[in-house]
Amino acid sequence: MDQTKLLNNRKTYFFSNKDIAICLGVSILLCFLNITNQSLWIDESITASLASYPTFGSLLYTQLYNTTKETQSHLPFYIWYIWGWAKVFGVNELSLRIANFPFIVILLLVIQWGSKIIFENEWSWSIVLVSPFVWFYMNEARPYIGVMAFSSLSIICFLFYLTKPIQSNRLIPGLCLVGVFLLLA
Image (cartoon, rainbow, N blue to C red):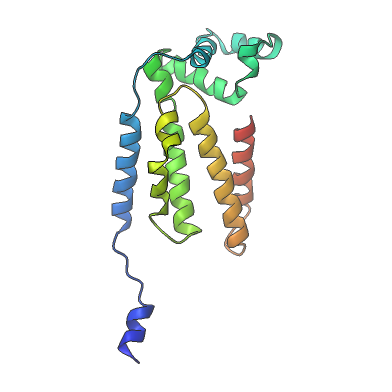
């Protein structure tokens, strides 16, 4: 067999899974360090107001029966999430902004999984790190990072289902629907 043909067929990987894990960890740390405790904007203060309700029942009552501008403009699951987060970490600027941290972890892991499985490129997920939307909205007490995470989950699962129908099982369409449900709720 020709030696050049063997070299062309060989896949070479410059980075191991450990390198990718380290890069993901550093990326998550950088996103975490980007969070500041600057003053809240008016719509962020509405989120803080809703998160400061003493009981979940009073929050739910406000969302269902007091349909004011402040309760209509927010995703209900996000408000429930931020209410629970505030009960654990408090209602202040920094803790409300750190609530985006689990969403950025989901976003980076989903995009990394999609770039590796669907696009067969282990590093295409890193383009997210230079997105100004991620850096700007990471520092806000708004649901935008969560929306990005769950829409990415839905899109990646849908693309996986379309591009690799033999490998996809019933879990993939279910994850896609869960992502859409959490995105819209």
